[in-house]
Image 1: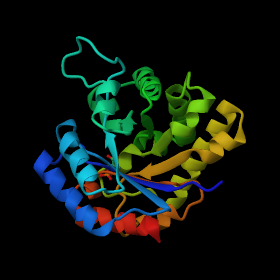
Image 2: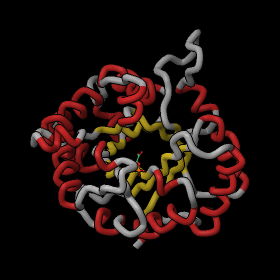
Image 3: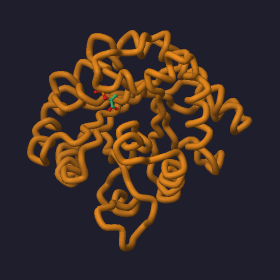
Length: 256
Ligand code: PEP
């Protein structure tokens, strides 16, 4: 089964609304859509409305994502953003369980799983992040650790909803460090994730259709080799996604 490559730019806590609009204009000069590659940007909440407006106005073929959300639809949860608010803001993807959320905001697998099911209930497309620390890798426990995160994150997900789920494998030691996993290392874990999904849902077609991204210091000069791996279906990009000059070469590598 062929899977369309997906390149997602996670802007993290970078760029004001005005800077985000400028970046989108830079992307618009280069990317007019592709049959083989899907591009999504995930701005901070404060820039989502402005970015959505540019996408609509310029008829850009770029999807809109959020970097996080709460699992309730509405209520007294000061500082939180709900799935229904994201839908109303024309967001279609939501990144969940990013290692920075797990590390700095104490999100565990139970929280991530609640958010994932809430996203699906509201017809958002979750991008479930997983990834091991350097210690776990050095102890040679990576595959077991990732398997646990995937099984916990996807707990309670209906098989029919799996077509909406994307997985992002992001080794923590490679995020924002300039240390990129070798294509072989990344492929080994992504292949294992596919095997776990196959085992969980008991349908080869579900595993075969699920997109699995790699994230961790992806740049224009290493993206092509990563995308060449059979079980890697694109990238979740952080640092290189906040300027058009560094994001465009990654999109270009996906389009080759
Ligand atoms: C990320 O935060 O998802 C990420 C992969 O960051 P970077 O590309 O900067 O390593």
